[in-house]
Image (cartoon, rainbow over all chains, first blue to last red; front, side):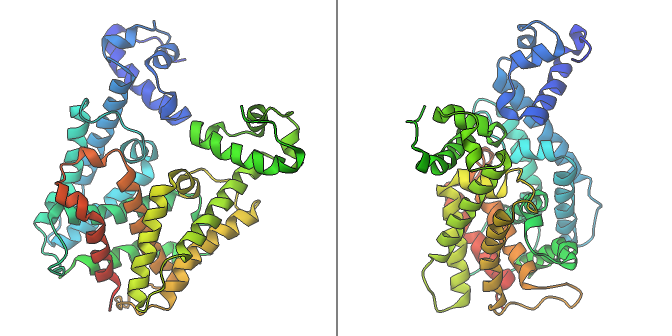
Length: 201
Length: 201
């Protein structure tokens, strides 16, 4: 049990405790009652700040998207647009590796209804737009006329590759595959080289 | 509670019940005790067939990989190797869509130690080799000499894109993004077109 918080700190204490509950026992076990129990406060206390369990979940997801967006934007500034995309990709993988809980909250968790949690939805949209807007200003290899294209579609392609790679790198199935040490070492560089071939004119 | 099984059917009943527990309450709540409780049999009965909780988990993961491999191999036979890869990709996405629990068990679940569960490890390796061996016999766009390549590395690239796309298509974050109906409709075709550009000579 954490030290009982003062009233002014209650909101932040609830948020920290919600992160801990999700980390220790999964998002299914998050409830305002459990937050209160672990903080040693009354069952009603968290309701001063959060209307429901979904509201505190939406809040910790929104905070994760905030931190993720700031981290993506902290990549080194580069001259070449394709180099910049590569740095964004490396930052993406790095965030997933070092913040597995927040990464899971953003992308692998049953989320509260986005229509009812506009702030969470906007933060998610903002993170996506960092990639999408970058691709809007990047000259790309032309696609066949029959294939629809837009910066959102290009962002979905790049994101799919990054999300898949980030998940596979953390997956327990990877050690089951008969990969050589060299293959494991070069996985990321190889994927990024193929991604460049898909996109570079 | 399910009807109490006869002894001869016990092993299969345990396996079915293990799938149901994982589906209803997550892999964290799988135990042989819980399997026994739900089947209305003695706590010791499942141990006739499974040495531990990890053994029954390894068994349902292995069964999922089996079914997945059979499904990948049921794709239509094609003349062109790149068309065949495309069909394999579509079968992959289709399996993920229609078997979300088994898909999660294979790729998004804390797995038992592969060294202690050789059968599970071999089934995972086999599913991966379907893609890897196909790529070994496919002429691919050359990469820069500084980039390591092998059919396993190519398979990891294709798998990353497919796994990411399958996950994003099912993710709750997708409806939060401001995508047009047209973009949603063309997501898969666009990703496959970019994947072809990455790979085709």
